[in-house]
Length: 75
Image (cartoon, rainbow, N blue to C red; front, top):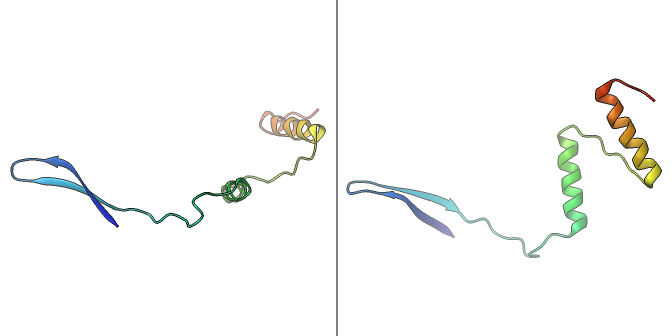
């Protein structure tokens, strides 16, 4: 389906915008798991490293490591 919108209309000219309306998925929604997977894939494509964190101790360890890297400090 096409859609046209008038941007500017003057006596001797008209500027219109045209765009194709994208088709929607049959599901109508994306599960949280699929959304998270797509987000992780996108971040990995940008050079981020995926780190599995299983508990609070692992979270704190990763946080400490990430703060040490740009500051060139180790504890």
